[in-house]
Amino acid sequence: MPLFNKKFESKPIPARQSRCNIGIPAIAEDLDDFRQISLNLGHKELRFADGIWMHSSRKGDVDDMLRLKKKFRVLEEENNMSNLKMECMLDLLAEQASELNELKPQEKNKSDNFKK
Image (cartoon, rainbow, N blue to C red):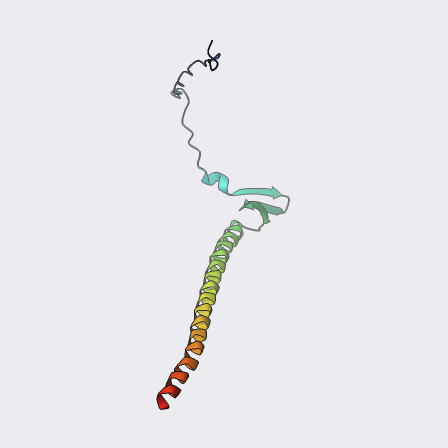
């Protein structure tokens, strides 16, 4: 009697049959209709945009706010990149200045030796 005998063998799983949607009409809804969700409560109108509800008097307010938020993000990223570049340049400048300060005394000693 073998020690490592398989006592259970699984049956092969049959392949799935593809679905046939011949009898069902295709969905023809535009997603743009659902991007601007608005809620009217008496004299107030709320619009759902970018994951939050915003109070607006007209549709353009929300669009302007979203456009300004995107522009603000882009400008923040540009500002961060320029700050990073400035820090790198200052590091390089400090490194070059320290190397020059180390070389000046050595050159001075060499010139003193030549004079003697």
